Each structure stands twice: as C-alpha cells, then as structure tokens.
Length: 409
Image 1 (cartoon, rainbow, N blue to C red):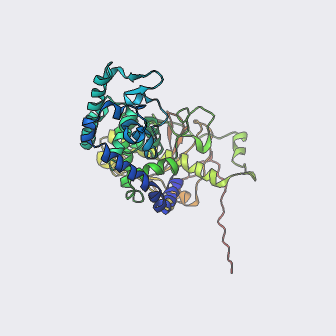
Image 2 (image 1 turned 135 degrees about the vertical axis):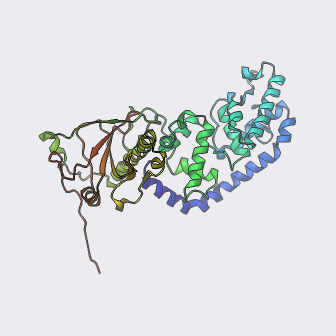
Image 3 (image 1 turned 120 degrees about the horizontal axis):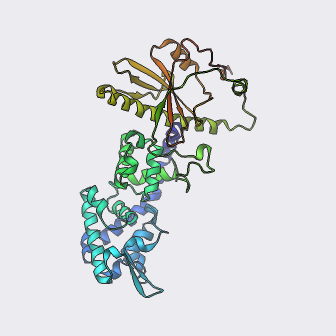
C-alpha cells in the first residue's frame, strides 16, 4: 500500500464527497423503490414470471433478477456474467428454462427452492449469520448483490472474491490476520468495513461511498493479471501476494566488489519521474514495514511475551527516525528502521535520512531490518543490527540529498 497516495486519495475524495453523494443519490432512490416493491413478503408470494430472467416485456421493472442485475447496476456490477448465477432463467431462443441441478429439474419446483433460498438469505443477512450466508445455495455474486441491496449499511457492495482479496492485500489486512484471504468473502467484507470504520477520514462514509472510493480512487480496480506476480507488470502496477510466508535469514556484511560499489554513484537521468519513483519506493517500503510489524508481534507472542507483543507499534511520523517500536524478550525497547527491496539477498542499497542516521548513531538497541524480495510469496527478513554504531567499514555511504534554503521578497 502506498501510504502517501492513500492519504492523498482520502483527502481528495473527501473534497469530492458532496458531489459523489449527490451523483449516487438517484441510485439509492432506485434501490429503495426496488426493495419496497420486492419486499420479503412480496418475494414469499412472487411467481416464476416475476423472478426468472428473460421473461416478460417490462422485465426490468417487474422482474426480480433483471432489476437486481440491470436496474441496480450502478450499485455494484454483476452484469456481464452468465445468467446461471440466478439458479434458473428463461432461454427465449429455446423456449425453455435453464435450471441449476442443485435446485431441481422441473421449473416450478426449482423456482420454489430458489425462492425459499432467497427468503432464507434475507433472514440470515438481517441477523448477520455469516455461517448461514456462506451455506446458502444461491451463487456467491448473486447473494452479494442482494445483501448489499437490502442491507446497504452492513454489506460491502464488492462481489468478486478476487477483488476482495486484492483490496484486503493492498491495505495489509492479510498481515494483521494471516488467515483472512483464505476465509469466505463475508469475513473479507467485514474486515474491509472495519478498516473503514477505524479510519478517522473514512468512518463517516457510507459503505457504498467506500466501495466507490476503492474502485475509483484507491487502490483502484485490480488488473486482470494482478495475481500473476511473474507477469510483465512492474513498478507501481504490481500488487503484493496475499499471506506472504516470510522468514528470517542470517547474513553477513562483506566488502562489495568494484562493480557493485559503482552502482551507488549512479545519478538519475533527465527523464526520471521523481514523483512516481517516490510513490513506488513508498509502496514497497510500507509493505516491508507491515511485514516486519507482523513478524515482531509474532516473535514476542512465540516467546510468551503477549504483553509486549500488544505494545509493538508502527511510527507514522518520519521525524522520529525509526519505523517500528518493538521490544526484546526482556522488555528492552527495540528501535527498528525498515528497509525494503525487490531484490533477493545480495547487493542492495537504500536511502537513510540525516535524522535516521542520527538516531542510529545515538540510540541503544537501534536495528536495521531489511526485507528482501518484497513481491515474492516468501520474502526474507534480515536483522542487520546497527552497521552505523560504529560504522562498518564494508558499508559505503554517499550524500544524496541537500537541504536548500532560499529567501525571496
């Protein structure tokens, strides 16, 4: 996740919020009309013609499936996928019904089973019974759209499990709850809604507004091949694998050869996109911090120091000079600066601010953690210790930044 971009996106979106709410007001009026027409009582008594897709001339207005898919398309798209998601539909070209086997073979009997499933879904949805929701025989995408239509203040209107996994991963929620991406979609939706509600800038947004933000502002709709981490996508387009199986490695600092030393003297060319590069570095850096944060809490819990694990925290203010405040098993504070690279263990270089260097030279128990191969499903964490107190002779340092003071009138 790109923290800087995320904060900027929230700031910009809050500025646009009145406009977004106004634009979506009509969609919610349509939703309210639909729910009023197809109330639970109405659904209990509707006939097959009022349900089955493909039936009737005025179907969008009076047909449940067409209304859910087309009339309410602006509140979450399920349009475009096969009509099999409805369990049954009318095939005009064949003058016959398609029926999913789990609902039966005869149209009227199958429809009764579908209708019963709809009623049970609404009941379970109102009670937030996630186990019953997961076990309901209606298709996942269809269930998601129905739930967000009837309970818009409870259920996130994101209907693709792949998209939910993508959003969970981009916000680092998979690191906070490692099993999250392996759970059902309702747990992922709940985690995302809780994430929204705990954020000061987002907690006043409706769930629908939050969904709009996810797709159109940050992190944006996932690329079709976002799971293929060996694909041609690179740079800011790449996404992180879910549930990374990180591990610690023991490495030694050694003198680099002449070729490697020369790399630290490279300068940016005139075509460098500095803003894009800064956001790219922030993106991988933030993910590295999330991994180390998770690893430190786990290390302390494994050592039986749950009380210390609960106190580990990320430092959001750059001026502090380190990224994570953790603890040794004996309770001593550990000041961790995290550096992240896409490279495998070997030669690498990183930036260290003057403030970070000052902290490294003065703080006791200051440590550099390096996260290698950040886009891998198996990133490696190396505790480099403090190579600056005293300065390790094999470490090359070169000034890269300047503070410029200009007085104008």
